Length: 119
Image 1 (cartoon, rainbow, N blue to C red):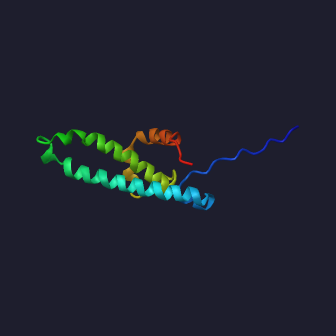
Image 2 (image 1 turned 45 degrees about the vertical axis):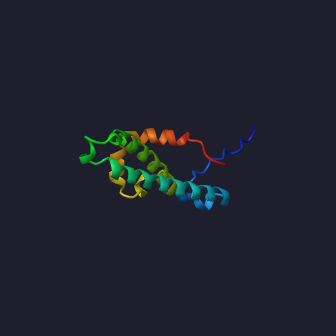
Image 3 (image 1 turned 120 degrees about the vertical axis):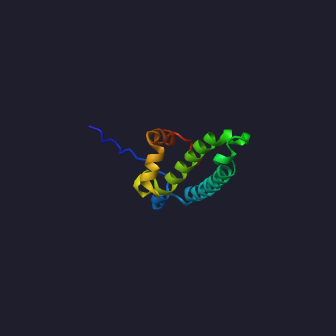
């Protein structure tokens, strides 16, 4: 009877697994973290500038607000996974995040699993 080699399970790229990752991967993660943080700040600025109730009636940019909120959630999810892996209890303000994502949390998990990773 042949012995099967154990299947190596890939380690999730996140800062909680930093000790199991190569310096090259950590450098990529640092770059991803900077980019995601910058992008989230841009969304916050846009949302503050264009997505207030007093602008609703007179600004065309207000129409983009729902799309910007959805995009912000996607990037926020990616940043939190990068920082805290899949342990949602470690995320800042975890109960509120779970409510915000709601039923979409499982969808985000599946999408995240198939996102291309940079090598």
